[in-house]
Structure formats: structure tokens, C-alpha cells
Image (cartoon, rainbow, N blue to C red; front, side, top):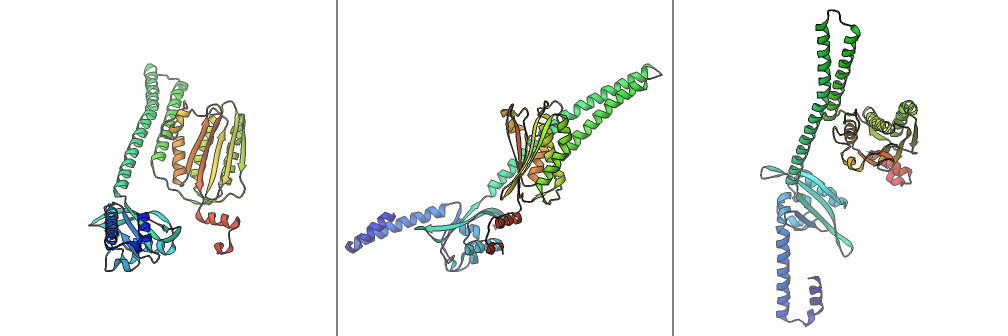
Length: 394
């Protein structure tokens, strides 16, 4: 259409009245089609000029923003928006010239609350900014389906946990039952029962009760919310303490412990008690993977937005088909493992707002990496130290 208009303008002096009317009709039809297309969109669209005045908006935008009042196109967009929080957001975004994506707002619509994702971006024309585009998407149903999926996943996870707990409890209970029966038979057979025999059976009962207790404690830890007490801490110091803690046991097993801490590690928000448990779970798995000795490396590296803690071993490695399942509850390749160690580690890392990943090859060892976010204030301090301007620092 743009080329057609350019050609028409070039021939304008030579056009007669009928040709002019034909061009105007074509433009009107094109404009009508465009308006119908925009009005038919389920998403809301608002186009503002450089003065933040809405020059184009469709019916979905009018409904979501609850645009009201006379002369909507003659005043800044936020002055016509019915929701106060959204109006403040639009004013800050438009006046600041920022690109902001998918900010979510709960907006009242005919007595019900709809969740709307709002994005603001620049309107470009001829390589220059000529205004702004506001995009609105009703994500109520999307979030509802996501919530249903999370509930289904949680139910499936709890079902798996329950099945695992039932299996873990069944064996100790069976053993306890057998040894109690043996004690009863010994008491029935003779008036004089050997204390050593009773002590042996009771010792097994005590062991199985302790095993039951650990199963229940691990299960409760895996399903209960954590009460984290976060404070800024040096993750490198935490890793160094863990290295010293496991070094004697590792050396007795013929395992060399290597500690590698990067310089200038930014501080991160930690609950040191929980994070030490997460790292210790990884270290214990690494030690178990090297029954014939090997090398255990604990590393810490800092980036502008995160600190990475790695636990690397030269052990047996993890089969490729098992990698997607290692963080699932009660999945274990150990004969005496509970299958909750990595699940608990995963939960602790997630509660810290971090991520955990693994790389492994059978026969070559494994490397688990915990990535923890650096607080915003620490990021700015790093940027200034790297040469940020004094104005930025102020």
C-alpha cells in the first residue's frame, strides 16, 4: 500500500477528479480493513505518539484499560486508564522511554479479576523513535492452566514420595517384626535366656528404628516449606569450610581434595546451614562414586550476576539415561541410598533462587554446579569497580 501511495503522490498533478476519488476510496477501504483487523484482535494494542497521546487503540485495549472520559486521544494515555496501579506503571514507562515486557496486573472487569500482561516498547518509523506501543494480553486462562498443571505435578510428586516412603518403611518394619518374634520365641523356649542373644536382636531393632526415623525426617524435609534465614555471605568461605570438613574422610579413602576459589567473589544471600547441607550432599555422592580413590574438586567462580559453586569428581559417572531423573524423589543407583539427597539439594538451591545443573560421562566423573544470583547492590558495586562512571555511582 505504501508503494501505491508513493506512486499516486508522484502522479498527483496529472490526476483528474475521478482518479483522485478512486485513490481516496482505495485508501478508505484499506484503512477500514486495517481498523477491522486491529479491532478483531484479542490482545489489546495502543499506539502513542511522542507526546504519549493515544493515536490508535483497539476495542480489546479499551476494555482492558477501561479507557474512559472525553477526548481520550487528546491527553496522555495514563490519564484515561481506569486502574490506578496500571496508570502509574504506564506513566513511568512512557515518560521514561523504557522497554518493559510482561508486567502482570490484576484488572477488574465486570465484577471479576482478569490477569493482564502489559508490555511497552518503542514505535520505530524510518529508523527513528516516533512513539510507543502498548501491548496487553489477557493471561488469566494461561495462568489457570499453569496452576492446574503445577497442582497435577505436585500430586504426582507426592504420589511418588508416598510410594517411596511406603517402600522405605516396609523393609525396616519387616525386619523389626522378625527380630521381635525371635525374641518372643527365645523367651518362650527357656526360662534362662542368653542376654547376648536378646541384645543382638534388640540391636537390629534399634538400627531399623533409626533407619525409619531418617526416612521420615528426610521425607518431611522434602515436602515441608523451608524457613530460610538469608543473609549476605561469602560462598567461597562456605566452600572452603566444606573442603576442610571432608578432607580427612576423603584422604582416608585415597581421594585428593582440590579447592579452587576465584578472586573477588561477590557476596550472595545464603542460609549457610541449608547451603552447607546441599553442598555436603553433593560431596558425599562424589565420594561414594570414587570407591577406589580419585580427585574431588570444589570450585567457586563469580560473574556479574551470579556465583557458581561446583563439585567435581573423577568417579564412575552417571549413565546418560539416568541424568534426567537424578533429582526426582527416591531415584537412586545406590544399594543403601534413600533417593532423597539430590531432591533435597535441588529444593535448597531453588529456595535460594538458584539453579543446579550436572554434566557427567560414565567412567569420567561428574560435575554438579550450583548457580546463585548476586544481589542487585553487589552487582552495582562490581560494575563500579570495573570502571563505572562516578555519575553512575552517585
